[in-house]
Amino acid sequence: MRLFKLPYLRNINDFIIDYPTPSNLSYWWNFGFLAAVCLVIQLLTGIFLAMHYTPHVDLAFSSLEHIMRDVNYGWLIRYAHANGASMFFIVVYVHIFRGLYYGSYHSPREFLWIIGVIIVFLMMATAFLGYVLPWGQMSFWGATVITNFATAIPFVGESIVQWLWGGFSVDNATLNRFFSLHYLLPFAILGLVLLHLIVLHEDGSNNPLGIHSKVDKVPFYPYYYFKDLFGIICFGLFFSFILFYYPNLLGHPDNYIEADPMVTPTHIVPEWYFLPFYAILRSIPDKLGGVIAMVLAIVILAFLPLLNTSQVRSSQFRPLHRKFFWLLLIDCFILGWIGGQVPETPYVEIGRAATLFYFSYFLVIVPALGKLEQILMRLDTTKSFKEIWTQV
Image 1: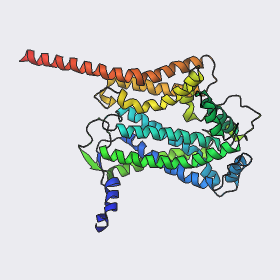
Image 2: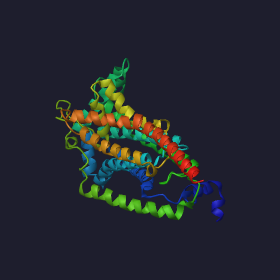
Image 3: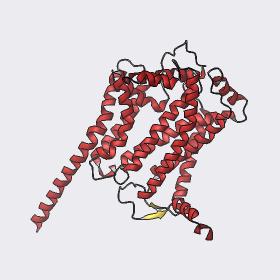
Image 4: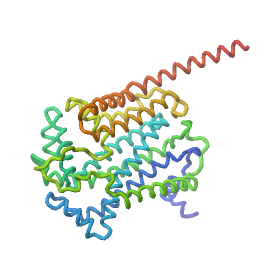
């Protein structure tokens, strides 16, 4: 077609239509595209909510009630945005664990992996800022508790907290700052997602076998368009079921009570997608140590390309690593469960054990398994050589 002779249209065609893709990608590779769909949903619903939301401590809670009751389909937009955050994290967490299982952080995709970790970090910051905006009880006290952890930073901690608050307590200036940042950061995430895709197209997608991605390829259209379409339909059914039947399932009931600085909730907990990191934070008896551990729990993912010593990508061919991977997944679920419990015996001890295993996986198990596999491969090669020599 003459239309595709135009340079920019040709580039778009090469990027999303004729892009050569490994022929053996499974449905686990749908979650990258689903994450992009979730981002678009969050951007659109967030923009429409911002048209009616009032970032003021006296009006924020009532403005949400106005959206829910008086704005045409406001209830749908608000619930889609609130539950869309949970859907976004579900999709991204599956995407991360798929990458861990199939070794997507291996060379030459180290930069791609690091960009993904930065995106996750910004997602968490954006979600925390957004959780404060309804100005319910859990919003207010969650913001108070989490921002106060910055005081653990030596010398500058108090100044950082006052800058975050815009004063000497969580108040109107805090809400305005959080609203501005919450509106801004998704566009930064969008830019990083585009960069993520550009880098992905440079080296090609990983695949279940972990082999070179430049062999046995098929065009992205129509093969993966229809595979992604099936994924969108399944995801849409799940999202719609939560949205229309259980829209408050993933929210905390205390957040449907207007914020009251004079009444402290009996148990302050963040949203479910923060619970594993909250458990890590509480498992360290030292305040500064807990904050560092919580941040490192995310940052350590970016160092996986350096920590990894294995020459094999996919865990399908790494039986020992496969067992530890499933233990890591179970460990993350345990941390999520512990994060929602009251910090008392035996939950504190279980949380510390789970935290120890989490960091041991990245700092000890991953490097040690790679070295062990290399030794076993050399021994196996030597054995095979001796057998062949004997036969000769």
